[in-house]
Image (cartoon, rainbow, N blue to C red; front, side):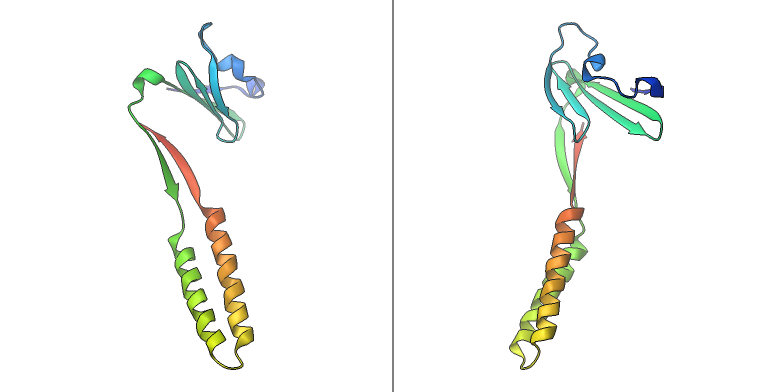
Length: 123
């Protein structure tokens, strides 16, 4: 169930999402905008000027999975550049090319780690 609230309650506290007086907050993931209570999971998302509120009762959840999305081509390019740098270092007078290939491989590997994302999927 999805609710759209006006912007006037955009900056509200987490306690306003608790509907039951006996409900307690177990955990809060501020980076993912998730609130776990002993009755439900609440996700609050802001898009443009609207607030999207999603609540799932714990009784309705059958499984939770963490999926990862990455860019394997960056990792493949990193491996190719490392092999190229090893080959260039083995050649005489190619230290500059080997160093550039190794630095490029390092940059691509860092980009691979930065672009890797994880998603929480609730079934």
